[in-house]
Length: 234
Image (tube, rainbow, N blue to C red):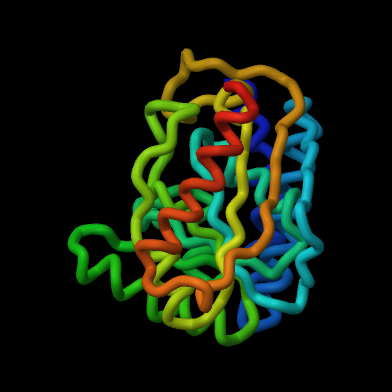
């Protein structure tokens, strides 16, 4: 409840700036800056620190497809602290009904995914590919939703890996080790939540040219994150 109150109050305070500044092409960069500020303020007020390890320096001016595991709502908030890149989220279309955050999806900062059918889900990959070609990076949670079995991964969906094969843009796996212990599913009012340090590793890029198809790229990304979680000893 405390996290929700902080998130709502800070979001409402920033909302007028979002409405005014998040417009047009320049509005995308402003929107990302606002979300970076919002994330840092929220984490400061809920006493969450972030400890990030990069296996390799990732240039800000090159696009990547970032693929983190997804065990907690905190994963989304922390991406803007972990990554200094120009990123677009692919998020479920239900977000369009959420207050405040929906504005970013409606104004092109992020991309909604309609999952009523496979055809609808595939259509979202077209604007996602266009953003990659513009030089923007994507954040795609390959599990598609928050796992109910943390710290065990659920099966990865194909979208991120098909995009990587089609565009030649590398996949960057990201391991969130312990967010599920700091903040559980936000729909569970009685789930675990506490202050602490989020441990994160940003892995080396995986280049699609080294793989024959999206399935092998998908399996390698899964293997890297799963192995990292197992080594951490959750």
